[in-house]
Image (cartoon, rainbow, N blue to C red; front, side, top):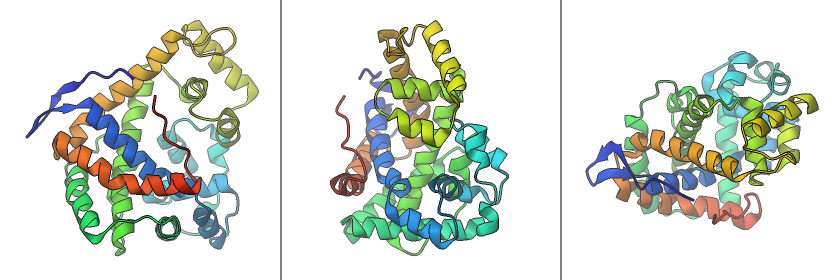
Length: 294
């Protein structure tokens, strides 16, 4: 991994934001958020609302903060899904309004964290909130649709789930920023998935099943990446493609540096350590894969 060490555009009380600190806290946030889409509690809560298909349930849970938007709005916000995948969510707001989906999502998150044995003391919860709350409060939501929607959701009374919702806001903020970087690098919705799966960090069968790009669309995206020199003729990642993928991540870190400026490098690293038990608990249960070291 090669990162520029500092971002001079985001000044903090302890100097410029260190992009390694930005990457570190972003990875901890992602690990503390991702489990909700994989834990059985989410499927159980969706089934209680009358939706047993995991695809539409995922789309409803994640887009509920935006309200009862048409599926086309969810498609735009999620970026890398095919229209046919997102069109399948039609009817989820008839099964239950967004407010009930959001409430069920909170129930699922709380149930899953407690089943997995997430251990955060009251002191650690309070400290984590003291760090993440000013990040959320100071965030510029221009162009950050999912982050802004989640920031508007009233926090639940359960302290652990309230922290998790704040985690969701900053996770979606980075995701929204990442989409801008993908578009700026000329990577369309299917192209970015082909490139990502070529790194072997995301299983191709799962991506193909959930995003539902056709064979023809997948092949066309692969051909575009081959033409750019990012994949070889066997659809294997080239050195240029690997460098491009890392550059895109680094550009996302640079974009995200301002988000973490309110708490600086020390605060970002401390928050990452406070959130680590959430991701660690779900890794131990097998819900999340072990973190990569490279």
